[in-house]
Image (cartoon, rainbow, N blue to C red; front, side):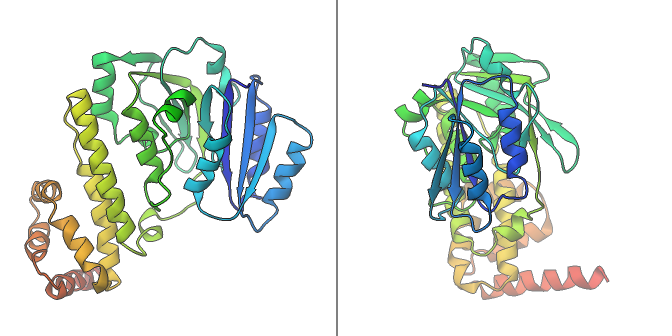
Length: 324
């Protein structure tokens, strides 16, 4: 049984998949299984996976019908046998020595490394020094850093499989937005220690997706994400006796709702209205003190949404007019 299971979800990744796999196989640490989960790719990704698997018995290839990244990661979790679990995206790669932390005596429930964001040459970490956080120090980092990019996705981390199994943690396949952040924050509910390491360097290659445009086809799944995440925030507050700010959460969801409205999606108004009438949402938006936001909140009482959408379209017209 390997000590580490590495899960890579793959979909049409032929352009960068070799770089990703090579960065793993070239590591000094070797006690791992590499699970290549192909999500119905239509390019040569599957052929690449099989070519590597034929030369290394640590590699397992799972080929499945296309069903999204959450189901693909879950397929990896279902067959993983390692004591620890880590995720790598197929368009990213690992720096030399990435798995060296596995050679130390790990005593925490979660290890969070460092991410290098290649698009803007920035480094993201939780702390400046390597440390193991427990008790009040752990509660404090949750309260201060919950919206840190490092805690919004599963990469650059090592999870204990026994915790994942005990609480049956999986990526929510009903969500098409924020499911990776939900997984990480649900995991945080079940641990008591967190280890940070600035020596673990994960290279994140941004392929240029516009997050707002990509997920603004329908507001329904976005609202589902908001409800799910709000529940997790409340659970974290209750467990750790801390106060979490939902400002960033509300901001992202509101920005996507605004784009949905620009597309005149009147049929979704009832869902958008529920979001805008949420007590936490209204408080956070009122605190911004903007006349436009106050009008938005006032017009959210419009049951049919006609006046609300007319106002929003008028504001968009003014923005475009004065940008000429």
